[in-house]
Image 1 (cartoon, rainbow, N blue to C red):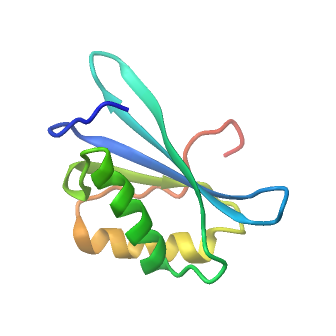
Image 2 (cartoon, helix red, strand yellow):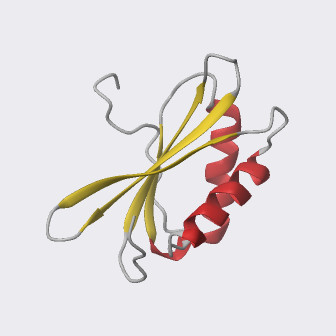
Length: 113
């Protein structure tokens, strides 16, 4: 993804378990550049003991690598999978401390919400 400094975006985050039973954090970013663009941001393995602050630190580091900041994030979307409710709910609370204006619907549309 090209580095963009001055645009608003939404972040879509999902936790998933791979075939080895490792937790994966998947992130997508959505922004408007003439048209709506959905861009895969990354997929990374989470430590088994990851807390909300650990996930926040991982996401923040990855956002910075792409020239993005929480200040420009207008929404953070998570799916409602039971495997991610605890850490993701905590993550949203941590994110809201950085950007209290962020919108936080409980899921993003995957055809299953």
